[in-house]
Image 1 (spheres, one colour):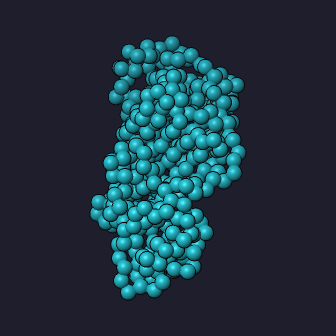
Image 2 (spheres, rainbow, N blue to C red):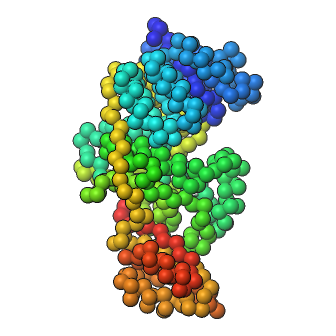
Image 3 (cartoon, rainbow, N blue to C red):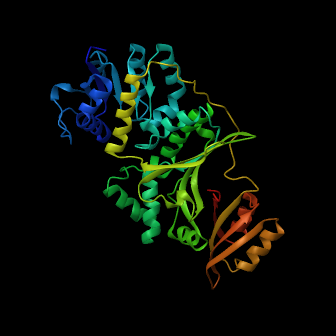
Amino acid sequence: MSAGVVKVGLLGLGTVGGGVIKTIRLQQEKLFARLGKRIEIVKALVRDSEKERAVQVDPALLTTNFEDVLKSDVDIVVEVMGGVEPTYDYVRALIEKGCHVVTANKELLAKRGPELVELANRHQVHLAYEASVAGGIPILSVLRQFLRTNDIHGVRGILNGTTNFILTKMEAEQLPYQEVLKQAQELGYAEADPRSDVEGFDAMYKLYILAQLVYGESLPLANVVRKGIADLSPGHIRIASELGYRIKLIAQAQKTEQGIRLSVQPTMLPLAHPLAQIQDSFNAVQLSGNIVGDLLFTGRGAGELPTASAVVEDLAYLLTQPFTPHPAWEEKTAEAQPAQAEDERVLCYLEGSCPAATPDRVLHFLREAGVTVTKLKVQFDLGGVLRAGLIATGIREEHEAVLKSDFGLDVRCFPLLETA
C-alpha cells in the first residue's frame, strides 16, 4: 500500500459500482481524516467500456480484461459484478495475489463462501461482505459485536425489498401479483428476470450468510426450506387481513435440538408484529439474544447508495484493522426439513367449487382427523363455491391431499409467526 494512497479496483460498474464511486468522491475528505490516506480508483472491470454511465469516469480506468485489474497494483478490490462464474475465479486470483476483497455478492458467498473464507485466511487478507446481506443495514457488524456477550437463538427478517414492495402494493391496492410485478420492474425494483427475488433465492443466500456468522455453520442450500411469492393471490392477502394477519416473505434461522433450521417462505404475521409494519422496499432484521432480548434493525436493503454505503464502510474498516483470521465457514448436512412441524399453527386458505366442500363438512373432516381448528373465516360460500381461511394445528400433507381429492379444494398453508 503506497504512502498516502489506497489503490482500489472495481469489478463491475453498474448501479452499485457507480454508487461506490459517488460515495468515495462525496466522502473523500472524511475518509482521509479517518484513514490518513486518499482512496483512488485505479481500474474498473466492465462489460462495455463504451457504455454511457450515470457516473463520470476517466475512460483510461475502464477495462474489459480482468488481467488488467490483476496487474494494476491494486491494494483492495471491490466486487460488485454479481454472479458466481467467472466472479469466483476473479476473486480467487485476487486473494491469491494478496489483495483484500470487499464484496456485495450474496450468491457467490452462499455457493462458494467456505472456500473463499479458507483461502482468505491462508493468504492473510480481509474478505469483507457487509453489503451482501441487507444493503445499508449494518447487521453483520452488529452481530459481530453482540456475539461477544449474547447467545443469538433466533434471526428472522425481511431480506428482499422487491418482494416486500410487491406484497405491500398487492395488499394496499388489491392488485394481482403480475400487475404489481410489472410496476416493480418499471420502477427498477425488480429485474427483467425477477426469479431470484420472487422465488426466494436472494433471501436464501442472505440467510445462509447470517447463519454462518451467528452459528458458525449453515445448511447446504438444498436443505433450506424455500418458497416464493409468485403464486400468491389477492384472495390469500384478503383472508389474511380478515383473520388479523399480514403476509410477508420471512427468512428465519433457528437453532433447535435437531440442528439448524433455515427457511424462506411467505409467513402470516399478526398486524401488530414489528415485521408486519415494514412496508414498501424496506428490509428489516430481528435478533433474539439471551441477554439483550429482541432487537429490530430496518432500512433500505438495496439500491445504489445504501449498498454502496456498506461497501465503503467495509473498505474503511479493513484499512483501519489488522488482519485476523475469519472463523471458518462450515456446512452441516441435514435431512430435508418439512415446511412446518406437525404441532405448528398454520393459516390454511381453501378454495374450490365442489358441492361437498361446505364449511361444516370440512371442519368435521379435520376434527375427525385430529386437526385443531381455532378460527375460521368464510370469505365466500354459495352454490358449491367455497373460499375460506382457517387457523389450525396439526394439519399434515395427508390432510391437504384429502381436502384436494375428496373436497375438490385448492389448499395453501402458511406458517404463523405469532411471537414478536
